[in-house]
Length: 220
Image (cartoon, rainbow, N blue to C red):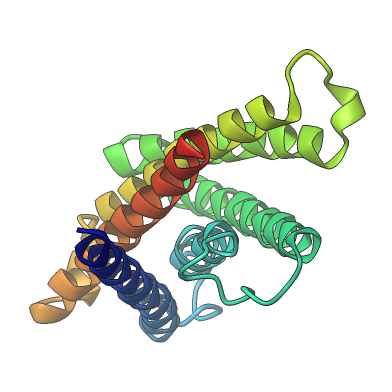
């Protein structure tokens, strides 16, 4: 019975490792592909899809997976080093997203188009607002003495839960952006479906790994 349980555990960890590797590959490939498709710098608008993909697909995914015991690219690093990498990547993600929002806002002003008139725009604005608020929550973990109402463990749990929700909002915003006129005109056929699969895959992987990390702690 014990041998069977150990075998199942090894298989489970192997599957999580493979899914994590697939998430790394998907987010990197999708970001590089979007650079080729959007050609940042060719127009003012071109910076928007590039920056948003860089923020929510690449930087934020890597920031979260840095703590994964199965998928982290920094597994041999200390917890403190991982924490620094996490908040650095998250800060870069928020800055890129803010710049991306400013660019699309300016572009719509120039073209006299309405703002936040689509589900993609609304989800994007909500995601960015949530990310900014979540960043302030992360500051309380860097400086625990700022907030002493809850224990550090409780704040970490809230931060991880809120962060997961924010990440899933980001994945939803990216997915909705693939139904925009620009994207459906630029990316067609099988390429569209492969791109659409990327935020779905990374969203599922991150949700599984974050959930299991905290469920494991609870069982322990």
